[in-house]
Amino acid sequence: MVKMSGKNFNFKLNERRYFSETFKKEKINEILSKKTIIKELSALYEIADAVIYRWLKKYSPVQLSGIKIHYEMESEEQKTLFYKEKVAELERMVGAKQIEIEFLNKIIELASTDLKIDIKKNFSTIASNGSGKIQLKKNLP
Image (cartoon, rainbow, N blue to C red; front, side):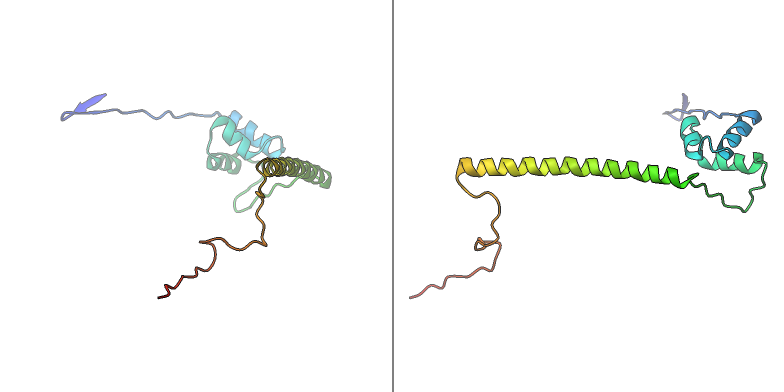
């Protein structure tokens, strides 16, 4: 802590991490052999994506300058499997929502019978005050 003209200042030194050249080359080879992806490395080692891309440009055996790399799933079978899993997950979600809807409808039905009133909104009824046109009563002499 440094004291300057009556005020205290806290200074924090930034840590700077250094990665060996062999580490960088190893991680670039993992990316190129599709064992991992840049986002995973970034999250695992807390490294910015831009740094990993810089490593890729520097240590890749193929010159990547000006080339965009687009990684795709390896086969149609993997795509199909991915989408089947996604559909199954969505079907589970829809099923859970359907159960919730049926539960709430049953509660409304039971409350209607216990209270002996129709709780569900009936669209054929006349609009109540405030939801329709207001008709003013005229005072007759």
